[in-house]
Length: 112
Image (cartoon, rainbow, N blue to C red; front, top):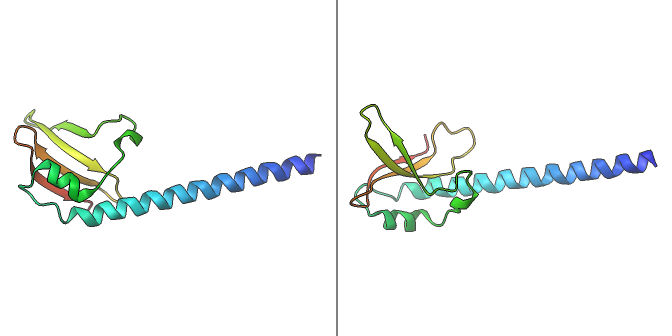
């Protein structure tokens, strides 16, 4: 009985490991696609044009469920940007900064 239970737990562990590896590889594939599309986004494009170029991204999968991120720099000026997943061990992700009033892209960071 103990041996059978051990095999069941080993099988469950194997399936969990395979699923984790599959999810990781799928996420890396998606991140690579966003990184390759990022080069087509240019400063001066509208935000909607940039989103079309980048393709769909499921923001609801993120922890805070937000599409637009904000941050403050040293001068207390608020910046707005979209972020996309980064490839494994990338120092920065793919980010598209924009002006909220004009909805024009002001800066593009393609994972460094």
